[in-house]
Amino acid sequence: GDFKDALRWFRKAAEAGHVGATYSIGIMHDNGEGVECDPVRAFGYYRQAVDAAEDIEDPRCGSDVWSRVAVLEGPYNVGSCYYRGHGVDEDHALAAHWYRRSADRGLAQAQATLGTLYSHGHGVNRTPSEAVRLYRQALDNESYPIDDPRKIEFIEQELEDLIREIAESGGGADGADLAEVVPFAVGDRVELHGLSSTSFNGNFGTVAGPLRDGRYPVKLPGRSKLMSIKPANLWSAPPNRSAGPAPRQTAAVSDVTASEAASVDADADADADAAAQQAFANSPQMLAMKKQQWENWLTTSIPMLNDMTPMAASKTAGGRSLIEKLLDFYSMCSGGGGFGGGIDMNVDPTWARRRLNMASTAEGNTTAEFESLPSYEDLGYKRTKRKAKSRQQLEERQMSIFVPLRCEFTGCQVIDADQLKQCSRCSGCVFYCGAEHQRADWHRHKIECKHLKKLGMKPVHYTTDGSDGSEAQLGFPVGCFPGPPPPAGEVTDNCFICGAGPDEVQLGYTRCCGMPACDNEHEYQQGSFSRDFCLRSHDRYTTCASHFNEGHTGDWRVCPSCTPQDGGAPDQAGRSWYSTNGFNITPALDHHFPQGSFITGSCDGCSRRLAMGWEQVTYTPTTPTKRLCKSCSP
Image (cartoon, rainbow, N blue to C red; front, side, top):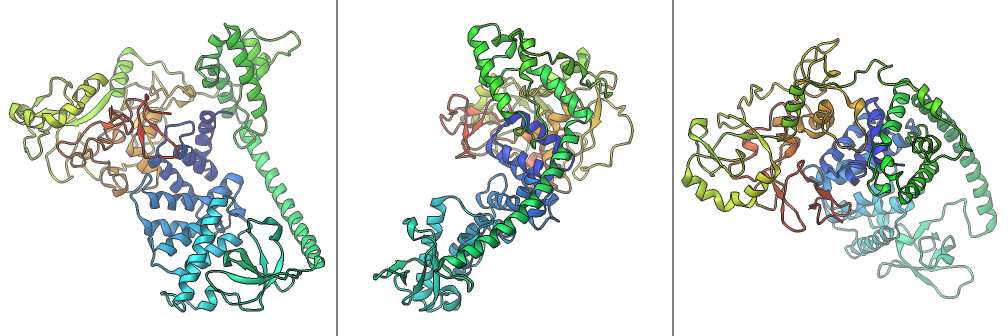
């Protein structure tokens, strides 16, 4: 019943290779469900899911409903990202390529969208006849149809205009045969559909004349007047169908038989899915997670409780009323409403009431069931016990930002640390070679200087040789990533972020760059957004990890798809936090952040300065590229 819970389980399933879960994570990042809206990560997960489903050409062959959706809709969403420049550079030609993948698999929305590209020549050569073919294909699609009346109306209008254009040009500018594009001849039997006067839909008639003004005259049995119908509202009547009732009855019987056969196959697939999900739900790891979820629930702030914890809410009558509504909601969502319908992570209402001293004497006791669940210690996981030095280093890295040692005045070549002085107001986020250049750049820097000081960033300074991208920043020359596979067996190195050793925390290696890091995500409290979990933070908050997760090759710092945005004008996003924060082992290359580029961006609502990753930034579903501060967010 909670987006954040769903996201947690989708991540677990995705790591196990579940295509549908990977695709679902992309949707949640795209819509801002359970996580901040992040178009770049959404695109990466879409591509990852689509690539994993490469061998599944027929969407009906997916292993479960979400995988089938990924196979069918995944390429369409990738295409939409390319078309809008949403999380990736805008490229209409690539958009057409991916739209075609979903169109060929039978998605009406993709067929219609590809038709629009051919109609207007976006990413493809303008071809009206192909646009007509795709539009008709979309309208005739009964397997995965379009259910938006406004979209259908748009397609019908487009069809009318295209057919008129082709008819008036005697075959169309693209050399199309008019007979192929306008298939109805006088005397052809047609079926009416999609009309606003629904009583006529499903009736059969005869074409009584040629196309004129974008419409056909159609004669219906029992009507003396001809009807003027758009081509988009006409289907060719198949040879085995007529205006009489008997053939309709025969066709219906045949359809039911086919439907029943498909239903049997679907039931078998559903049974197999349910069995697999149940086995996954009862695994020791999942049961341990369930136990921790219940424990953490008691002290987690919950929006439905007015951001109170259940423990705090249970102290007042109003809070207890809210808890009852929340538990009723959990009960409603249990069973079929959890992850895949097979794992119910919602807190057991009876157990919750007893722990909060809200239970009636008639309610049973589920404490025994709860205590019988295995703990993470039972499964061999460590509890994190960082030493003071490691905790302090983690706090510093959480507030860190990589800053190049150079004069920020555009055109100045000084990069020698001995010749540079930091801006005293923002504590080393910006350097200048002298007062003259600082004064000359003040009109730009003053826009964000005060805000940088307020944020309390801890700059990590690094040197650069000022070349065109070959600099060996912090001892990691270009081309060193991805590194060699990490050694097998237990991790003995310290975490590269907080410095904790194997005696303090469970350690693992990052998948992208092979660096040792705290692998303690099993202790993460859902909804806390804590950054105390080093490997988790590196995996979620760095371009290094997203480069790997999106299936890119080579060093992330020179990958065209992963190049950070430059901060130029005050209204731009600022330097990429994902490429400069303290969870990175090394920052993006210096030349991606030109002299005079902004570290912060600005709110699209009130224009106040915003630092991605440092403070709340909201993206609205309707305008996913619009950044809003906490005060301006809806």
